[in-house]
Length: 113
Length: 116
Image (cartoon, rainbow over all chains, first blue to last red; front, side, top):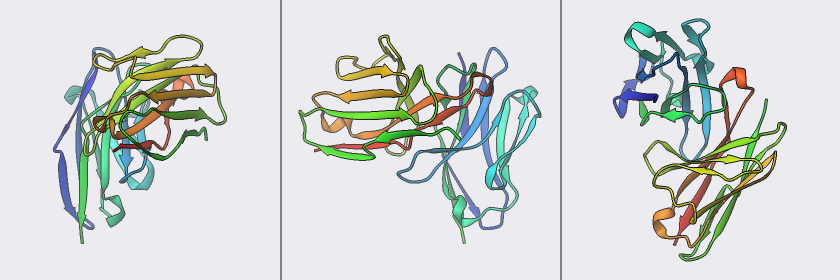
């Protein structure tokens, strides 16, 4: 069975500072990994995905993530935080295209002016 | 890109009544759809897998007689919460798989259910 662990339920950064949201996965086979963002009372928006191509994945809004098999990690980063980045972020995994995603518990990102 | 819609976006119902939530794939066919529930400040938890033309598969702990799922066409799955209780108040989100090789899911915008 696959799972993801997001370290830190809440991360607070200053505007302009580096954003680092951590995600570690557990999977018996090569996984497909995703990062989603959720704004209050809204659905999920896909930020980026890893599907066994390039290990460094660039997404929308300046976010990127690096797949590190040796560390079983897929951490999300952004060089410079913006106020509009304040939201809930979810890491998710699945093993095939027709199976549901398994989500981490989420990390709430706060950006301080 | 492909879009999944949900209706209604929010609903308030009285305890003991039933409410139906629709999930539609707007420009693609979805033989499978997934229903998730998200309680406040929590993550998404899979409730059930909806399969077109066959019975839904429910996750452990989800009452199939309370959460009725019907997937009568390739573009529509419905979730009916029967005899709703305040503890059923939650955000319900559906998703549908994209092209198999992409491994993506298209998510609906969610339905906020409040049971009074």
